[in-house]
Length: 331
Ligand SMILES: [Fe+2]
Ligand SMILES: [Fe+2]
View 1: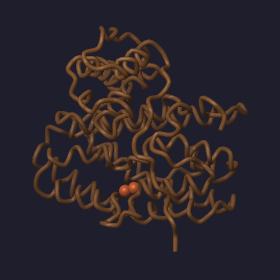
View 2: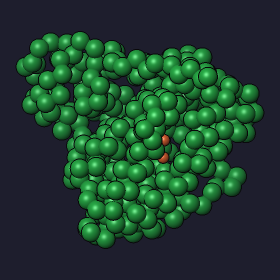
View 3: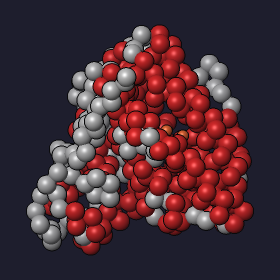
């Protein structure tokens, strides 16, 4: 019988990476109300802003050990978070092409790059075990809360879009079986790769690019006004996951990693081929039929995902190219 690791449930606060993240992390260690939170004037993709925003969002998920739960709705902190979001969202919007043609942004995602220059191509063809383990650590920030950010959108949908998105989420959450929850499969993968499966255990060593992707999902999920972007993001992610999971499974087999590592990707090869269809036809199709004005946001969700995935890929590949670790500290 397979044993499954227990995911530690409540993380500890991370180390600050600059004035913004320091003031949030320090504030959370005191009872409300905090002192003045600083004005936000920082690189929208930088370490400091990205971590500060991530810490604010985490209060809506599991929170942090010894941080009071009522910080989640503390008005000064929410005001500060809104500032961080504004800087981040403005940057993302100005760095994507925009538009209203949803098919024009989704169709190219269906075409496989040959030979392909992405991270999964690189790992499949020439990656080392160390690089794979680093990749798992980057992705652990999301995969240990896999599909949670998307659940925020459920009350904002109706009809077929709602029914079908919930059907996809049902699979992500294990179809009623705890051991098949995708976050659990990823925890099992980490353990089998000799890594720690604790929730946000690696937050301090993961640099901004991987965290920014999770921030994007949280922002889209938590704002009803961005529901179109959340659905666009989710659809884009499902379309690209099946082929990249196939390459990851090949990488893991080539490097003879244990079956428990392969299971997570094997599950996504099959499931996401179906999820892709459901998201595009039943969720997106129905949503845009009801609310055609959301097309701009759907396109934003797709393009923002590509933009931040590309930034993460550039970071990983350039680090490995120069022979250095892609993490803030070597494992
Ligand atoms: Fe999944
Ligand atoms: Fe999926």
